[in-house]
Length: 527
Image (cartoon, rainbow, N blue to C red):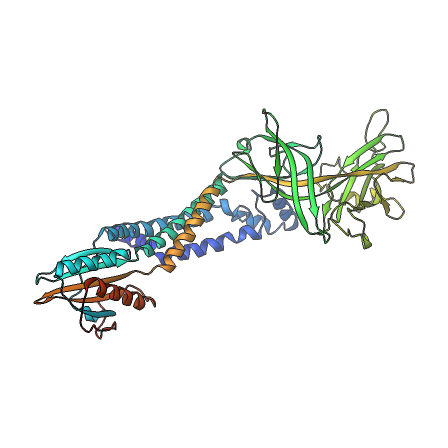
């Protein structure tokens, strides 16, 4: 029995609204480390980089799952406790609210003058039953729930109440919050996403798969084989700008298909994603990829289409172009260990002062490059960024800059290096960055958000109140008395009650001096 009483006590504590609010705050605090530390499901390479930068601290953080916050047992425990608390708190309130909706409005108190709003309407020539019927109609027209009660002394009271929508909205708000938590959990557990930079052209497409994404994240309840197979190819990208560089149109024309299906054409815009059924593609960004052709000293030409990353709103972009097969052995094709070539520099769609583009559209495209020769370190097995020159070969002197100033090239121009090799700026292609994702909790979250706002609006705007009319028969007809009581402070109730009293006098046809609407002198009756 002691254990049972203790369990009941703890259950009451857990299912109180105070505990639910405390758990909601605790969940927000527990989610904060997820934005402070890199997460494995969003990028394992970032976690590895954190390990390399903080070798002493990282293992301790990993022990408490700070690199997997949202999949950690302690975060899941808080989440489940919050959902349990909300369910245990809301179900009894829902039961009580359903009972209140079925219950008839209560009979009028004995002393109506004690209520917060009270008025005597005078006497009417109608009999009590007919007057009560007309007063009931007055309240029904104002959407009150109305009930008639007959007194033992022959009087008839009309009880009416309004404002149950307030508690309905309150419950809707909290159930929507619960649904929101369920939707977020479903999206995290069974959702996935993959990001990819896609260059325009027939030879640069990709298919959805974790190996072909530049960055991806999988929910803990799915694996790589659950990602649906789609293939994409960028045909063209159109961007239009105002004279001040402000964009007006972004449109990507893509061809997509399932792995074994027929290709289809579609348009992709910033606010118009491509719906694929079990996945959606969104347009994230765009830029330019200079096309450079390098001809080594043996006369062999290599062409590279390399995306440069924008650094400002005018699409001034920087990047590197690597030619690891340059000057390879003509007989064996083996790469040279000291004559590989790379270039780093800046691309401007419209040449401007101080190596900064003057306009994001291609009016005067220019690329400014520095040349490097040596070992690019691509065969070392060490991961490195494709947007930067290899750091280790630069640091140990295996890759050195070719003496000379940076060279500026426009489309069709050629640069001859010191060993007779040449680099030609052929032109540019457009590229876009896209994300392909599926979030099964998205419809739940959307519906919950709408319901949450609707419930909050009802909860804040509706006030619950009750109104009574008492019709007492007399020798020349009947006398009518009215009273009202709001459940909470409601500044507009006095005007509403006065309008009801005026309509009741007209409907019942009362005559004589009516007591003006006022406040009773005694304490308020309990609700």
